[in-house]
Image (cartoon, helix red, strand yellow):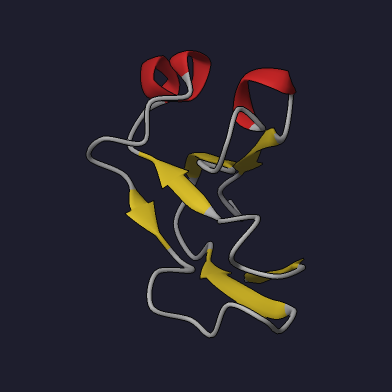
Length: 81
């Protein structure tokens, strides 16, 4: 399964996958993956993440203080068994 996120204007927003729940709760992007790094700053951007394995996946915005103000979410992927 894939999940498609659209972020408006990369200069104001980012899509970070946090490495674990602890980093997610602290809004600490260190060790995470920035899906918007290197993308054109002035256009809305679709970010597609691969959710083919079961587990918890943590995402948020690392710009400004958006994450600490709640601009973050997690996705739980269950096994198909």
